[in-house]
Length: 133
Image (cartoon, rainbow, N blue to C red; front, side, top):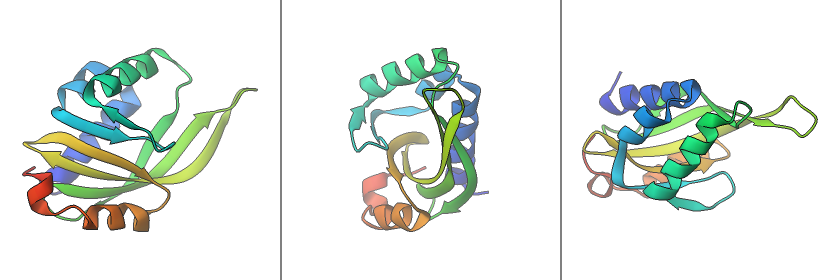
Protein backbone atom coordinates (compact mmCIF):
# COMPACT_ATOMS: atom_id res chain seq x y z
CA UNK A 1 0.00 0.00 0.00
CA UNK A 2 1.05 3.58 -0.60
CA UNK A 3 1.15 6.18 2.17
CA UNK A 4 -2.14 7.74 1.10
CA UNK A 5 -3.72 4.29 0.69
CA UNK A 6 -2.83 3.41 4.28
CA UNK A 7 -4.20 6.75 5.49
CA UNK A 8 -7.42 6.41 3.49
CA UNK A 9 -8.01 2.84 4.70
CA UNK A 10 -7.42 3.96 8.30
CA UNK A 11 -9.86 6.87 7.87
CA UNK A 12 -12.62 4.61 6.55
CA UNK A 13 -11.98 2.16 9.41
CA UNK A 14 -12.40 5.03 11.87
CA UNK A 15 -15.58 6.22 10.12
CA UNK A 16 -16.96 2.67 10.36
CA UNK A 17 -16.05 2.37 14.04
CA UNK A 18 -17.61 5.74 14.91
CA UNK A 19 -14.41 6.88 16.65
CA UNK A 20 -14.84 10.59 15.97
CA UNK A 21 -12.03 11.66 18.31
CA UNK A 22 -9.39 9.65 16.43
CA UNK A 23 -10.90 10.74 13.12
CA UNK A 24 -10.73 14.41 14.07
CA UNK A 25 -7.09 13.92 15.13
CA UNK A 26 -6.27 12.88 11.53
CA UNK A 27 -7.72 16.06 10.02
CA UNK A 28 -5.49 18.87 8.81
CA UNK A 29 -6.18 22.22 10.56
CA UNK A 30 -7.34 23.64 7.19
CA UNK A 31 -9.39 20.56 6.22
CA UNK A 32 -12.50 20.94 4.05
CA UNK A 33 -15.06 18.24 3.32
CA UNK A 34 -17.52 18.45 0.44
CA UNK A 35 -20.64 16.44 1.25
CA UNK A 36 -22.90 14.32 -0.94
CA UNK A 37 -25.36 17.23 -1.04
CA UNK A 38 -22.69 19.62 -2.35
CA UNK A 39 -22.14 21.60 0.86
CA UNK A 40 -18.57 22.33 1.96
CA UNK A 41 -17.74 21.97 5.64
CA UNK A 42 -14.75 23.57 7.34
CA UNK A 43 -12.83 21.62 9.98
CA UNK A 44 -14.89 22.95 12.94
CA UNK A 45 -18.15 22.18 11.10
CA UNK A 46 -16.85 18.76 10.12
CA UNK A 47 -15.79 18.00 13.70
CA UNK A 48 -19.28 18.84 14.99
CA UNK A 49 -20.95 16.74 12.27
CA UNK A 50 -18.67 13.76 12.96
CA UNK A 51 -19.30 13.87 16.69
CA UNK A 52 -23.05 14.08 16.10
CA UNK A 53 -22.95 11.18 13.62
CA UNK A 54 -20.88 9.07 16.03
CA UNK A 55 -23.66 9.40 18.61
CA UNK A 56 -26.35 8.42 16.08
CA UNK A 57 -26.63 4.62 15.79
CA UNK A 58 -28.46 4.93 12.44
CA UNK A 59 -26.24 7.57 10.84
CA UNK A 60 -25.28 7.38 7.18
CA UNK A 61 -22.47 4.87 6.67
CA UNK A 62 -19.64 5.22 4.17
CA UNK A 63 -17.99 1.95 3.21
CA UNK A 64 -14.77 1.77 1.15
CA UNK A 65 -14.20 -1.19 -1.18
CA UNK A 66 -11.29 -0.21 -3.44
CA UNK A 67 -8.50 2.34 -3.21
CA UNK A 68 -6.97 3.97 -6.32
CA UNK A 69 -3.90 6.08 -5.45
CA UNK A 70 -3.09 8.89 -7.87
CA UNK A 71 0.19 9.72 -6.12
CA UNK A 72 1.50 9.88 -2.55
CA UNK A 73 -0.99 12.55 -1.46
CA UNK A 74 -4.11 11.92 -3.58
CA UNK A 75 -6.40 8.91 -3.76
CA UNK A 76 -9.79 7.99 -5.21
CA UNK A 77 -11.88 5.57 -3.15
CA UNK A 78 -14.74 3.43 -4.47
CA UNK A 79 -17.43 2.28 -2.09
CA UNK A 80 -21.02 2.54 -1.03
CA UNK A 81 -23.20 4.84 1.02
CA UNK A 82 -25.81 3.32 3.29
CA UNK A 83 -28.34 6.00 4.24
CA UNK A 84 -31.10 5.33 6.77
CA UNK A 85 -34.68 5.41 5.50
CA UNK A 86 -37.66 6.77 7.49
CA UNK A 87 -39.35 3.37 7.93
CA UNK A 88 -36.15 1.60 8.98
CA UNK A 89 -33.51 -0.04 6.87
CA UNK A 90 -31.02 1.66 4.56
CA UNK A 91 -30.88 3.01 1.03
CA UNK A 92 -27.71 1.60 -0.53
CA UNK A 93 -25.97 3.25 -3.48
CA UNK A 94 -22.49 3.33 -5.04
CA UNK A 95 -20.23 6.23 -4.22
CA UNK A 96 -16.69 7.46 -4.66
CA UNK A 97 -14.53 9.93 -2.81
CA UNK A 98 -11.54 12.03 -3.82
CA UNK A 99 -9.15 12.53 -0.90
CA UNK A 100 -6.03 14.64 -0.58
CA UNK A 101 -3.59 14.59 2.30
CA UNK A 102 -1.18 17.23 3.54
CA UNK A 103 1.47 16.60 6.18
CA UNK A 104 0.04 13.09 6.70
CA UNK A 105 -3.41 14.48 7.55
CA UNK A 106 -6.72 14.59 5.68
CA UNK A 107 -6.76 17.92 3.84
CA UNK A 108 -9.61 17.79 1.29
CA UNK A 109 -12.45 15.36 0.65
CA UNK A 110 -15.01 15.41 -2.15
CA UNK A 111 -17.95 13.04 -2.54
CA UNK A 112 -18.52 11.95 -6.14
CA UNK A 113 -21.03 9.68 -7.85
CA UNK A 114 -18.39 7.55 -9.58
CA UNK A 115 -14.74 6.56 -9.57
CA UNK A 116 -14.32 8.49 -12.83
CA UNK A 117 -15.69 11.60 -11.11
CA UNK A 118 -13.31 11.19 -8.17
CA UNK A 119 -10.31 10.75 -10.46
CA UNK A 120 -11.38 13.75 -12.56
CA UNK A 121 -11.69 15.81 -9.37
CA UNK A 122 -8.17 14.81 -8.34
CA UNK A 123 -6.76 15.55 -11.78
CA UNK A 124 -7.59 19.21 -11.10
CA UNK A 125 -5.44 19.08 -7.96
CA UNK A 126 -1.71 19.31 -8.57
CA UNK A 127 0.64 17.62 -6.14
CA UNK A 128 1.80 21.06 -5.02
CA UNK A 129 -1.77 21.98 -4.09
CA UNK A 130 -2.32 18.80 -2.12
CA UNK A 131 0.99 18.78 -0.25
CA UNK A 132 2.90 15.76 0.98
CA UNK A 133 1.29 12.66 2.48
